[in-house]
Image (cartoon, rainbow, N blue to C red; front, side):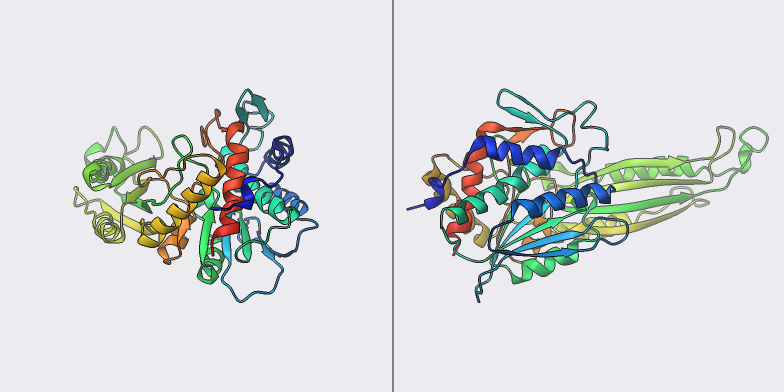
Length: 381
């Protein structure tokens, strides 16, 4: 393969500086002003390039969405580059326990690995292509969203709208397991479980009480018991709240349930099981609400073909690109793959420690993966 992206001018120090600018603007999901400030920086990085901007205002307290499109007229379906600008780290992490810094091959910072590093590599790769006079194989649309870390409640419709127009989707989520990309993800379900009992004085009228917390304990064991590793199913009760005082039989208790499934059929089965939970104590009521909020992302024949093309691009650049087994982590790529649009995920920076105080990207992955993204834009016809 003759690949121009393999030799376009890309400078490591320049890319690191761009990543630094994005990372040092803290942007937790619920800090709309922080995310809007990052989007301002994103627009600056496209200045002078043949693109148009569509900045959509935020809703429901979230920041807005930025769409950047190549300006050349074309009847061809575009390549959609999908990125989120929100992070999980609370504001103050940057000036506290996770400052931006370099230590050998590692670049540290909140949201650097997940996923501002990869997002910046896509922009840098595209910019280098255009500056070198290389025309992408198709129009390119970049979509920068504000709420992926909480399930994309305000951006899902926009993601699906752009995906329906696209020929391919490239997701700049971080690489996995030493540089592997993602070609399949489990579906994700979220549920809210409520038990409602009867309050009573814990000493004087203990026999009159019906404990919502005791009932919840039964329900937690039932939900957690649905995990089946052999079938790729996991269930987790991750948050529980209940009771009003130590000396009162608790009237109410709530729990949040996370479900991961390998395909839509198993997803329907598990949704029915969770929604069908029944009380152990007939005097306590159980109510469950929820559903699949990220559909499963299966590895289709079109994705396998796309993977093979990406591997050919990587070989031209000089590295071996592998994919990983289906991962339990969800992303916005779940939405696009579920629509049948060939989607490659995990194309971002290599590193480790997502969502932790050890979050970092590897400097050694910056240029190869920026060239990989540029090469895909160059060759995906």
